[in-house]
Image (cartoon, rainbow, N blue to C red):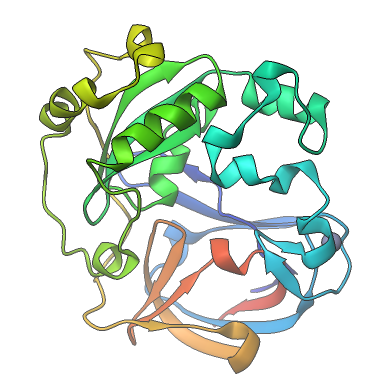
Length: 264
Ligand SMILES: [Zn+2]
């Protein structure tokens, strides 16, 4: 079977094990069905997720020019506390920013390698947690806009991590933490403005990933340099493909690469 197209973040479904799909323009691949099979990947060209041109990808699947122009790549995406749509203040495109920022957001605790705090739109739960490879997660606040989620996250960052160690996550060297207890310890550090929005009775979500065997060492595949790679797919966790020879490939950070994928 042969597929060709631009890499984009894999859509997922939370089932007993997470279901992963690699979606191309006219076709899609249900990755859970091809575990233990050999696949070959080849890098053919770039295709910016915004302008579609064959220009080197800079960040988030966008070329340099698009990254610094389009509203989908504003600074408030990575730093929610910089959101200003609630003040009617434009960053790059106020209409877009209102649509995205002025909707319910969740501040959550997720454990993928350690407990971290994060922010996501409510519609992105549990997708965001799956993308991070979290085996457990808990929403702790539901606020009406992105700015409030951002200032809550900033306040909690002094007391809990805001980064994941992807190596630990992929080796599955994880422990179970009682996130409800962690939440109860953290609420005192929240800013007053968000206190009405605390989710006191939320329960943890458990997430199981389709991985037959976890890698012991890790080799990160740089497809732009290597151009071609073949290996036996052993699993998917977060947005990473995991291969038998300890190679891992992050689909998310390779968005915008136009590839050929063959299942042998
Ligand atoms: Zn572009």
